Length: 144
Image (cartoon, rainbow, N blue to C red; front, side, top):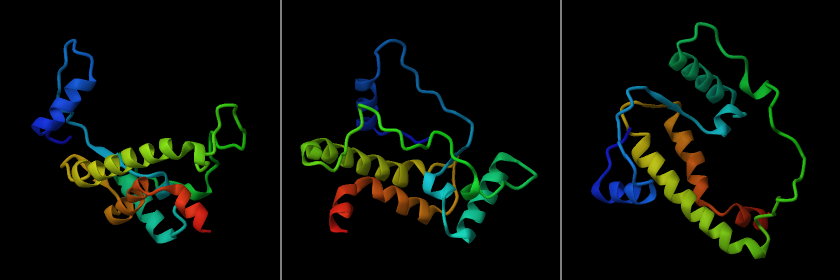
């Protein structure tokens, strides 16, 4: 969906298996959104999002209110692998994740969303939510 400059292409090729690498244009449009857009408490903005998605998918019937739908895979089960990322022992890991989150969100906002075949409902709200990927979630918790 986005052209690659020489450095990006080099990084891509360094991370992929070397056998038979091809980059093909995908003619299909992409509708990108964040989970917050599905659960938005601002009714006007959420309804606008639902209409945009309905239009993108070519549906004639409107969606039911997303925020009132039952959620799948949402539970309070704790697994042995569970960690509290805000604990000091995970500071280095969290710092790395936030750094990568910031880099990813900047690329999505500045490159991917600008592509001709990418559709976003309420670009400013989408950008606002993606910017949070580059913020330490634990600094907010500690301030409260």
